[in-house]
Length: 260
Figure 1: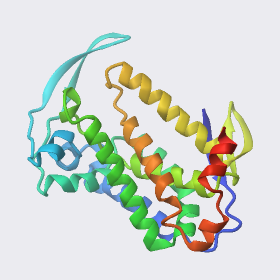
Figure 2: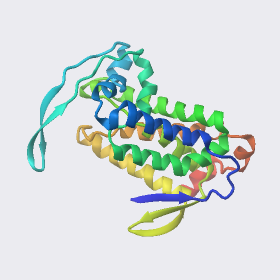
Figure 3: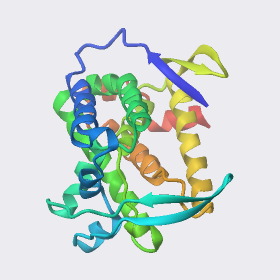
């Protein structure tokens, strides 16, 4: 696995106001409204739940004590119930993408947004980029909802900006496949093209999603939203970019040939 630490911003023409604002909004929601993850009533009221989106009805469930088998043996875990949602349930498609499950979840997402988001914002312009980000997040959430509309996963809540940020990575792959990205790989700092850094990340999501589904989907990570957001980002990248950017970016046909 590779971990990106920066990329080439020498040709960036605009300041990433929207990217910084999005990072600030995510941090504010987690720290203040979610109480660093301790305010379960708020979190469980505004998370996205597939069964609620499909039915259009709010679902409230009690907190439960469950026994899970772990390598250390059976462990009792408290599973918080779903709280009443004070807004129309379809709005949780939006509210959920500004919440996170832990500090590491937040930091990981914001780090990727900081590195890759500014370039895509520069390509699209501030307003278009904001709509792009929100569209990727909502559409990625809908993909997760439809893939978990029935069965045990229907009432499993989902939250996080991963779907939206996956869309940013998908756009980065289309618009900047050859941009230099500095990564740590096998404890070594190296520079790789954008399509390598982002491509490895996407491959990891696909493989992890496959094994997660094979294991019953209990891994706690919505890999389908990651993959879905990434594909949505690739599709919307050029239509939502400035005309000059569309002309200079590699075409999808050339990108497929390169990756092939």
